[in-house]
Image (spheres, rainbow, N blue to C red):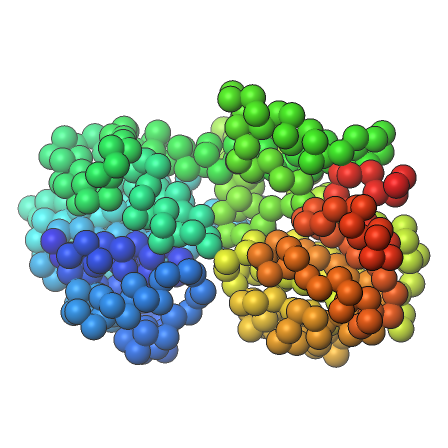
Length: 446
C-alpha cells in the first residue's frame, strides 16, 4: 500500500518508519525543507531509541521517502495520515490550525479515493470538521464526485519506547462509521497485531475521546501518588512501601505509580488542559482533571521548596549540579519538563547550574538560552558535580542509578543530594556521608 504522512515529528516519523518496515511505500511530508533535506540523509530531528536504524534501513531499501510537497506523497496513495502537532493555546485549548491547514491542502491536491487518517490528538468533533474542510475544497475544484473518508486513529506512543509501542500495540483504536473503511484500516494494521491484541472499531467521537481519557487517567495516577508522597513527608510513611502495598492489588497494578517531580512532555499536560477546556465549553466542570493539573504544577516546585528549606532563599555563589533535563529518560524532549521550573527557579534564586543530560543538552541550550550566563553544560555526569554545593537529580536515566558515590565525595563541595526520582536508599547515602533528600520518604526526619 502507498501511504502519506503529513508531519515528521515524533508521531509522523515513527508511524511512517514502522509502516515502511512492514513493506508499505511511505512518503513523509513536511513543510520544513531543511528538516526534509536532513531526513533524506537520515539526520533525525529527534532522539528515539531504534528510530534512526529503522529510518536508515527503509531509506536504503526505498520504502521510505521524504518530501516538502504533499503532491508527491498523496499521488496514488490510499491513506493520508495527518500527524502534525496540536499544541496548547494560552487558554488550554488545542491549537488546530495545523490540522485544518493540512485538511485544506489535501482537498486542494487529492484526485482519487483517499482515506484521511487523523493520528494527531484532537478534540471531539474535529474529524467532522476535517471532513467538511476537504469537501469544501473539492467542491471549489468542481470535484465533488471524488470519494474520501476521514478516520480518527489516535496514537498511544510513549516517548522513549515509541517504536516498540507501534510495532506491538496494546490495541489499535479506529474511529469510523464506514464498514468498508474499517476493513481497509484493519488490513493496514494487521501485521502489527499478530499477538492477537485487538483492533477496536468505534464511532469517531468515541475514538477522539479515548485518547484524552487514557492520558488524563494516567496523569491522574501520577498526580495522586505525588500528592500522597507530599503527605508522607508531612505525617510520615514511605511512598516506596505504599507503592508496593497498592500495586500488588490486581485492580490497581504497578504502572504510573512512581512519585517524582511531576509529569511533562507533549501529551499529558496538553491533554489534561484540553479536557478541562472541553468540559467548560460544554458547561461541565472537569473536577478530577482540574485537580490533576493543579497537583502536577505544585509538584514541579517541590524540589525547589526542599532546596529552599535546606539552603534558604539566597543561593548566590552556590553551584548546583543537575542530572537530567528531558521530561523523561530515553528522549531529548524538553516540553513541559519539570527541569524547566526547577532550573529557572534556582537561577532566579542566584545559583549557578552545571547540567548534564545524555540526550537533551542541545534542546536545553535553546530552551534556556536567556539563562546562558547562569548555566553550563557538561558531557559527563561526574564532571557536573565538581565543586557542587548540591546535586539535583531530575530525570531518572539508567546511568544515574548506581553512580560512584566515593568519587562523588571527592568532587563535591558539599555532600547534599536532592533526588527527585527516589533512585537511592537513605541508609546507603548516610553511610557515604551524604545529606539525602527525596520524594515522599520522610527524609527530613531520618
